[in-house]
Length: 112
Image (cartoon, rainbow, N blue to C red; front, side):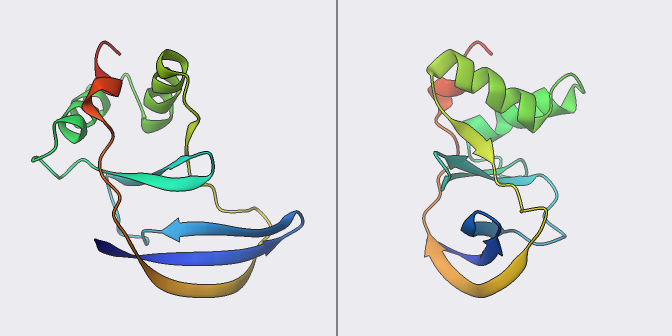
């Protein structure tokens, strides 16, 4: 379990929540599945095979995290996305929450 900063925003369409990794989180992404945080990618984590594959794909300069997620979605019929902050936002609440977000499953990154 790791603590994450969850920010709740009031938007034109209602309250939206977002996991904020901060301004200094280079090479880290929270991946959402159907608008819920499910995975945490960290390219500095060498213990995870999927993080190493993503690091090598991004390192070649031919892929970015968005294109990798698009290929995973089309191949595995998933709805993975990056969390997007609302354009017009009014912060309602910030809180630390504990989540257990694993890296992406290895089999999703095979043959992409």
